Length: 85
Image (cartoon, rainbow, N blue to C red; front, side, top):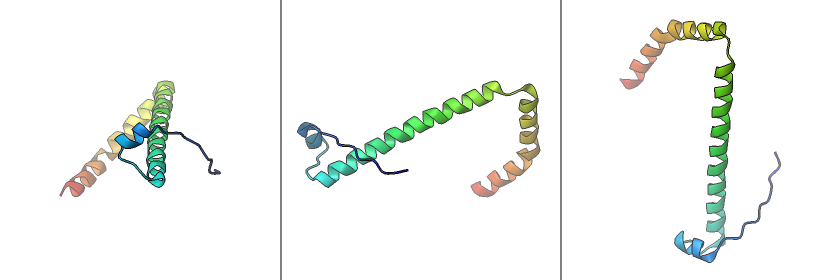
């Protein structure tokens, strides 16, 4: 993916509230906020994809997954106990 440039104009009062006086600090703040926003969007998209997947599963697929969870429950409990010790 190629980097893209985005130009953002920020009101001085916003920068004052954030106590930012240097352009680089403002750039870092905007970058951070945009990254947080994108991560939130990705999380929502991932959640919707999981909802669609789980809603469209057949009963056989659901039963197979439940059986796998039962099969690995003992191992999972051992790992959990090791991590908490």
